[in-house]
Length: 184
Image 1 (cartoon, rainbow, N blue to C red):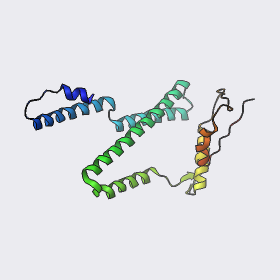
Image 2 (tube, one colour):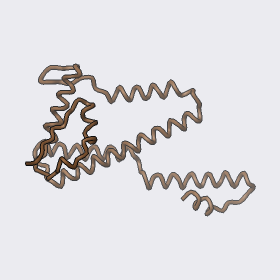
Image 3 (tube, rainbow, N blue to C red):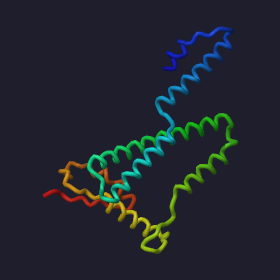
Image 4 (cartoon, rainbow, N blue to C red):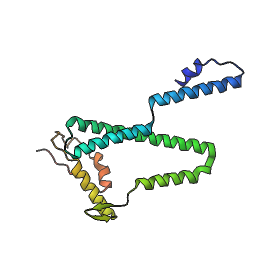
């Protein structure tokens, strides 16, 4: 795309002004391409989260049908892709900023990352009517929430003898152990 656009430009002037004008035209075309291909990722993420939240509310009222469950899974998949794109964009912007300003942005950049990490972290939760910051209690309650939330409602006919046990290794590092039962 870049090569085709670059060769399609016909500008007048000396070499330097031609180069400058071609870069200006290419910048405009790249902005348009970026908008067409990626759009505004932050707005897209907000829309996806809003749709997921609406389906979650419907699920809490036990009004979620099978096609809505599939739609929710698709939205979660889109959210993961959007998050990866946003992370990649953040890394690229940080790299460009570092290239422009050198190490002068280290302190600022790291403070932004630390603030983001702290904002995304939670130290405890309310169990019953009591606040708890004990990591074991938090881990146990999170596990209980996900076990209650994600229960298979039907037999999908999975043969566990063919499932690679390495797929479940990540769960054991988090203190979870999969409860796999063989079909009889």
